[in-house]
Image (cartoon, rainbow over all chains, first blue to last red):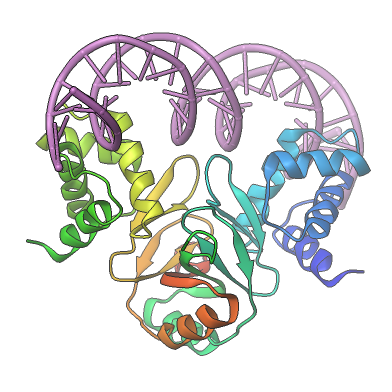
Length: 141
Length: 141
DNA sequence: CTCTGTGCAAAGGATTTGCACTACG
DNA sequence: CGTAGTGCAAATCCTTTGCACAGAG
């Protein structure tokens, strides 16, 4: 089984919720999309593998995954929330302030910082999101 | 003049836009709020110092400031976007996945990373947002 | 004067809620 | 069996748009 699917599924069962077939389909479609997707777009994808799943279930499942800290909604341009996967415990991207292009990158320098802050604020840190903002080469003219 | 107000104001004029009295009032109210505020809440505050300013102008000014990279909308809990100030070139906070409490902290370790990535992706990085996620002491039970 | 910015009202979307029904454990 | 989950439709809330007017340069 795909590691990400397992992490997302486990986050649901570990919090005392049921892993229904609808939720499984949603998780599967979400992982396949690699994130950066809106709830509606995800609902669309889910319908292709499980036509009976309604938009509402997608919204509610995403909310649940957000609570579990394995997914995070962000503003990417305008309008609807885009959901990104936090299953690796971190997510890093560059975002253009003008055209809202997103470029993901890998970097894991914040592990130590997580520990320090966990103690300082009595906060159980489980993941982080690092967004760098600026202008892409096109928008910088 | 307050440094943050100056940075926000300059971001408007430097991009060829006008610094009207409405925009000045919005910027002033935004800085006073210290960010983490919704557009509607900000409009409310603005009305207290400049009653003629409409909600629309607040939305449009915030959008402008986002384009300029000095403000960033984030999902903080549910519903409306919360706007945070990026006037220092960075913003760091902890956010609880359950109750959405936010704790800000200071840290500037990402400067070098900004330079590296700027070159690697031909991206003019001007600011960053680091969000650590997890559970606050209350929600961890 | 000209063109950007503003305000209103209405439109357009996205998200949430209420409720009866289904199905997992 | 009982409770958590689902789906629909409606409601609600947030954001955007169209347009005529005001104000800055």
